[in-house]
Amino acid sequence: MILQFLGGVRTVTGSCYLLKGRNFRILVECGMHQGTDAEAVNRRPFPFDPAGIDCLFLTHSHLDHVGLVPRLVKEGFTGSIITTSATADLVELILYDSAHIQESDTEWQNRKALRSGLDLKEPLYLPRDVDMVLPLITRKHYGNVERLCEEVRYRFVNAGHILGSSTLELWYAEDGKEKKIVFSGDIGKKDNPIVNDPVFVEETDYLTIESTYGNRLHKSMEASVDELVEVIKTTFRRGGNVIIPSFALGRTQDLLLILNKLVEQGRLFRISVYIDSPLGERITRVYAAHPEYFDDEARRLFNIESRDAMRIHFTQKTEDSMALNRIRKEAIIISSSGMCEGGRVRHHLKHNLWRRESSIVFVGFQAEGTLGRRIVDGAKKVDVLGEEIVVRAGIHTLGGFSAHADQDDLVEWLTRFRNSPEVFVVHGEEKVSLEFKAMIRQKFAFKAHVPEIGQEYEL
View 1 (cartoon, helix red, strand yellow):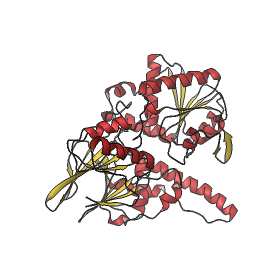
View 2 (tube, one colour):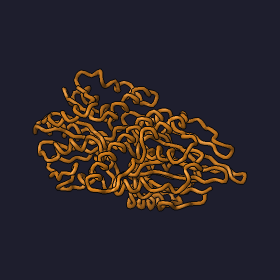
View 3 (cartoon, one colour):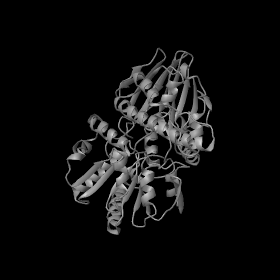
View 4 (cartoon, helix red, strand yellow):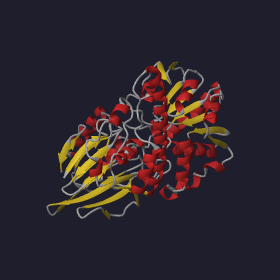
């Protein structure tokens, strides 16, 4: 069998891996690229015939793992899309939201192009293309070994990253022998606020493992929560707002649970939290519908709307979002996108980034080339919605809120293997992946690679 790496290598976005057997073609992930040259990369022709793919596995529902699925279907894929039940529910929301963004952004770009006499563009895909995706989805549960075809069996186990996230175990038979390959998906750290801890896999012949934080450690969750409390209190004393760019999926729900707990403990009180993301509200309701994925504390705390001490507001209409920019102080605004590349958060940055009394709190990874990364890296001025904005607000990065495993977590995950798999390091910036590969070779003596885009390996 051949394993080909088509995305998510030497970068943290655009995950896509192709398995080519004698009688099958299997795709694992079909993610959207984010950051530098994103539009051009996402419009490149697929390096395979979508109609020739038999099956697509999705480990979880983040856009960098599922964002090009409608384009895949639009261009001829008609096979099964296999994932967990919660992931299926979330994928539907994520893809419709992405399609609406493609549509509105292209309309805005084309209005400018008409005035300038430039060529018009087509959206990557439209909501009607998402309509064609949904009937192809097959829902599976954690822990059950399923048969895909005569040569292939598979199983999902909990990856502990977000609701429904999974690690994919896949067994394949060739020449009378069965081999196994594992796709880690995005591995969660221990004690993520809502979902249960990752399940360890104990044996495989081949392994693709993410390396988002493969060369560094997170602050503890306790230290990050302490810092969040201090930032909120200090910012409110200064008379400013706290703006939190946050992914609508996963991080927003974690933050709501954490803020709710802080109110319950008396560390914060009478706070107003604005979730300025229609998608964030819809995803929060999906979370509430899947308590079977929760840990014990999350089941107790997740009924956030019943808490009197924390006033939570979901904004649906555009005019409601605009009204938030008239609030000058003591608001906590959680808005997408998490890397500040789109969505409503850009408007809140435009109105608060230049204010010394306000604070911007980053709670997730910022990919190279994104607006969020430029701010985190210390830019003095940034372009926001076509206007140059000076950066005067307090900038805070709280690594403990990341839903990704750090280096220690990844090492622990690797220590659970009873054999010595051949390892492919993916889903990390190039420098990070190379450093993590060197560490794997030194610590475990596993054969390890950092693939190039398009590179093939015979398994």
